[in-house]
Length: 295
Image 1 (tube, helix red, strand yellow):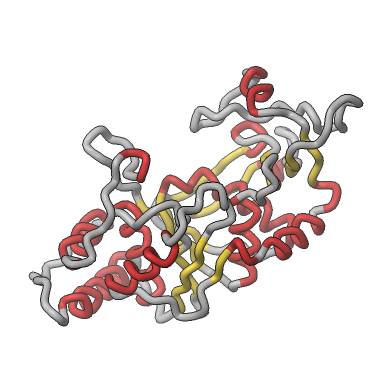
Image 2 (cartoon, rainbow, N blue to C red):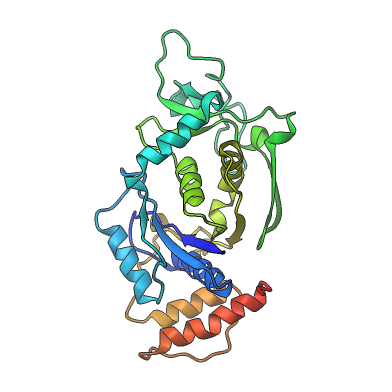
C-alpha cells in the first residue's frame, strides 16, 4: 500500500514554496489511492517557533489537506532515534572538531559549497579532546558501497559518491539534538512510508538517507523531488528570503499557482466559492496521475 507524507519544520508559517511540496505529496498519495501523513519535524528545538506547528496543520486543513493518521512529532521520539543510533555500532564515532576547525581544514568542498569533513577523528579522539558530536563513517572512495544511485521520479537517475561529495556526516549534533538525517530515516521506516515527495532542495540529502536505510536494514522508498520555488533574485523561496505566509482566505489562487509550478496546466476555471477546494482536487488528482502514469 502506498504511504506518503508531508514533513514540515515548524520554524514559521507555510509559504508558497512549502505549499508546492505539500500539494505534490498529497496529489501523489491520492493518485495512488494511498495514505497521506503529516509529520512535524521539530527535532531541532532551537529553531522551533512556538505555535508554528499548529498553524501549519490549520493551514493545510484550510487548503483541503488533512492527515490520514495521527500526526507524528519528532520531539516526542528521541528514544527511537537513540535506539537506531545504537544499532549502528562501530559505524559511528565521536568527533571533537568544532565548525571552525572543520572550516579551517579546507581540504575539499561539497557540491553545495560545504566543507567535507576530513576524517580528523575517524581513528579516535586526541588525548586532550572531548566528544562534541557523533558521525557515521561512510565507505572509502574506492569502495563500491560509497556510490549511491537511485531513480528520482522527477529528476531522473541520480548518483552520488558519499566519500567524495559528503564525507562522514553528523548523526548527533554538538548541541545534543539528533540530526535530521537520522530522524527522518527512522520516522519514514516506522511509518511505513513507501514514497517520499518533497522539494529539490532536499535532493542532496537523499544519498545520505539511503545509506542510513541500508545500514539499518530499512526499505528504501521511492523518491520524487519537485523543483524548488524561487524568488525574483533566483533564490529558493524561504522564510530567510522573505517568503510571505499563505493567505488562507483565498486558497484557490495559491493552489492553482502551485499546480502551475508542478507543470499540471489545469484547464479548469476555479473561483473562491464554498466548493472550490474540492473542485480543485477533483481536477488536479487525475491530472497528476496522468502526468506520472499512475495506474
